[in-house]
Length: 311
Length: 311
Image 1 (cartoon, rainbow over the protein chains, first blue to last red):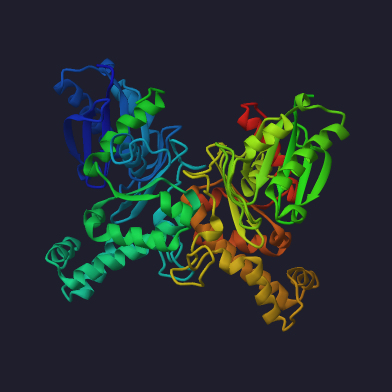
Image 2 (cartoon, rainbow over the protein chains, first blue to last red):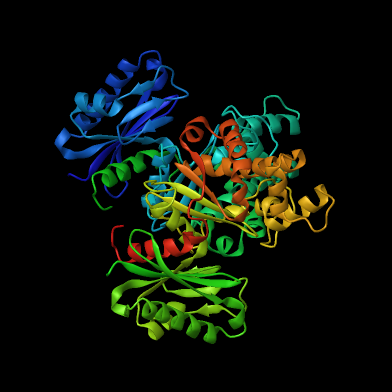
């Protein structure tokens, strides 16, 4: 049984847990509401530890039956020292040694990683990216995140903050971004921007992004044009990534990627037109496969890689 | 004596050879004129092999006294199979198995690499980048090249063409580039563009880029503004690289980098203003140190890495 991992995917709203086996299959799950603990990080950590132990107990397992806990966190973390620097959407978390705190409470080796990196690891080993040595994973949502597999390993960067595709500038001049920069890719295709644009385009204050998707499904020309324009922006941003990193694959995930069927061809077209020929020829643009489970499954990969176990 | 390498740096005009020791010191040198052989690649390869053997003989060495030959080439190559796909500035080179051809003629293990990657290897192990695990090296000249050291190794990409920083777009709309794209960084700061701009700015058809440098040295305000604007462009291009790769260092080399003292602070300022805080805080922008010898010295690193010898 020593091939199991407990994956924990901490989001701003929910915390998902999964008991994952070495084939990337989720055998059991549980959930916590992040908000119930937002004012007290000590309580949240205790609740996390309890949830991990409960998931074990429910499956008639003990600590010795799992390789470890893999924890995905939405923010700046130090995976080597096991410290959370800051979680932008969960107040009060500054320099928390969560690895040590959880290990003390659960007695299980614990590894932490940025949530987008976990998704990337999941897609790489058990999703659409299997067998790829060099790939880029982007998540399109409220923010635009990115993870990099380079030379057959997760590339974290000097301070573990590599992959910020959402903050690559699309133009020398452009809208100011909360990151302090301007013209960032995220400012053109983040959910808030798309929502505002949808409401303006369709003159409907209650319009949601999924409504534009539904209209596109009905063949509505303005809705199709909306996704075409969004895809053009995404393609423009990826040209630089393709020329710089020469990846085999770019995986597109996150909520907006549900509209991949209206965007995939346009993204591909822009890259074929605008990127260098050799790079363009060898890159595949694909939709993420594991969707909501990518983080939990990536936790299995994280733990195995950290322990030096070949998957 | 088994710590010597012969470095060969093939350029469009000259071919430089160097006998390099394991401390990165060039003990002896020789030269060939590329143009004398441009119409006959067979003759060029024979001349290269002769030059390698002559450099050995001149130093009273035999094939057994060197670890190998490291060859830097200005074009698309396959370092694993030892094949030159194409050299844009040297006609007639298509799918040439140069590694095998040279090994047959010299009897010395030969390794090939893209020229900018060799410069990057040189600066990493023996230049300004010593000790860095994650760095980006850019060369500013007729073209704008780039090399990447990521996770303490040269990152080549899926088809060995990673690092094309010169072809990362600066804007969604911009001047057409010979690569087939548009708005590429190189189109804003490549030598041809800078030369045309200098001649227009100073209303002098014979103006050279070094003249703008000389004027800046005299405190000429238009010349200082010229370099400031160029540096702003470079900074804008590097913001995306910094956010994506979170490097420890960006090394700026190539001819234009001779004007680093007029550009360094502005590049730094743009990155501090526009890149994400964590990434900006940990990246150093520095001038290349090995200048014209970087490729030859990098050949020593290439050969040692290929043979698994720690430097």
